[in-house]
Length: 109
Image: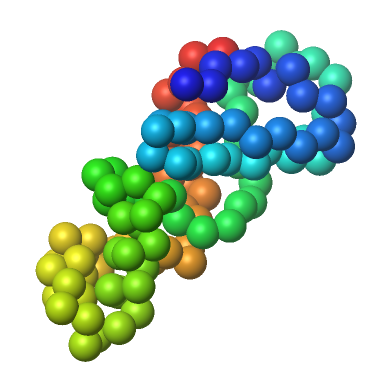
């Protein structure tokens, strides 16, 4: 589990960290700008990103790729089950920045 203050990162730095490492999830963090401290600032904010977070319990990295393959092929035997499980709202290509920011807001500094 990764637990590091964002002040650890230097401007322009890249770092990959594991989340549920046994399942193979890695997140790349790139610091694009460091601002002067602001005492009114309450939490980190996500401005942009790529793709949706994998759904919980999708079976790790391999299960996630299998799920994406089933979603893309209506003839796949798992297609209907996966589509029903995910519902109409989940879209692998769409990052829900509002949802990410709501999660960041719940985190403690």
